[in-house]
Image (cartoon, rainbow, N blue to C red):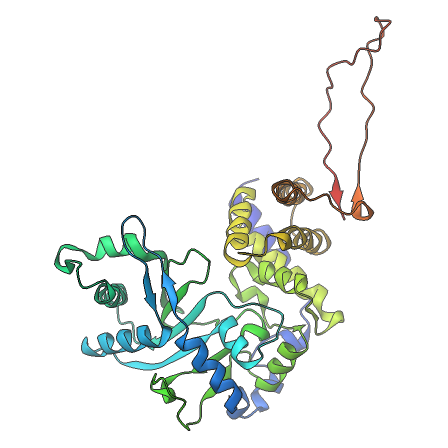
Length: 400
């Protein structure tokens, strides 16, 4: 079957799945009745203090080759980038702290550690011109030691030395770019330049954005109102989900990859579904969108390995549990794959889990292991019990 036919079949199956009414749209009737202010909330004094600590913490940007490590504070890079953008005549609507770091500021003990510092610059992107790359690299160039001859260093060289990842999306609905600066411990400083972004969160617990403009990036804690916004739409509901470690989302079909990998990560960190009756339908949507975006088993493996690399630094012993949680969700909730495709994906994840165990020299709890055994045939013509060459495939343990 061709890939196009397969994708169409998955999409058809996915479209025809039942949709729980409360998850149909972020603009459903209950949402439309809420006042815009319910998306926002003022930070208290303790939260503002934590915010200042996060913005003042030195983040090392590790250079490749002979390039030195740059030690930057997020507040300093925000000031420098904003100033350069404005000098180029580019209007900055606002600057926001996004994602897990914003969640950490609001609820410090929320069960998830923040790694990337995700900073959003709201700007206008009239074209695909990569001005934001030049702006950021220019700021990094200014941070090099005084003894460095900056005139001999090109933007391409700086990008090779300090940029870990670059993403640019420019279409009818989404116009944004992301630049992630290298950090060997996985705590990357990520700057996102957003003109339009249709979907700005995966789950309610990572839907928070803190508006940084009132702080004016000073080291002191001025007596000003700092607002946080939940892109989920209901700030108090999202805060309850964060405090009590509950999983909720809307329209997972809008998320690239369906949010499946993040969902499994939340389960590993002792989050539980906010609605047990609706989560199975949402799981099917997550799996369907994941396999639409990553139809090939090699693509799936690359995506999973990349997720492990970026989200489990220093948490090596959690990788096995994560992989087996992901395997269980896929096994229980995938409805749009043929049998052999399903087995390929499940086997791939099982092998990755076994590899993780091997790297850590961990023996799994045998209560959760099913071992398959098939006796080897003997050669009848020999009196001694010589083993014949086995013709069957090796069986792998299935961790359930």
